[in-house]
Image (cartoon, rainbow, N blue to C red):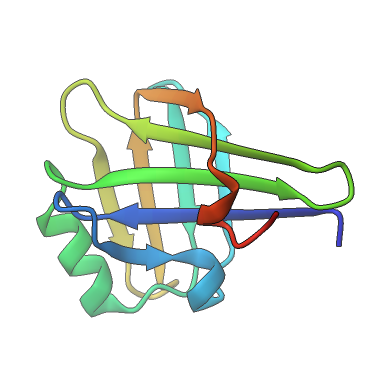
Length: 114
């Protein structure tokens, strides 16, 4: 298990609303015309509604941890205006588009790694 990736959606006060690693949600993060597009699968409709309703307050964090190579990376994903968030109930898929992705140093204590 060389590379572990996760995406976390946090509310305006820093509370995690969705953590793909904890909920077992598959996701993709890809460049898009707007900047960055995140597709998150297996998202409960109530949780998706909550995230959509907080569109102007939510923050997104993308993590990559590689135990073998001993690196930890973290990006803050945001939008200069307001992220575009939509939900497809039949597919249980939440789609988020944001304009910016900014990398920063990770304190390894956040990940439980030494």
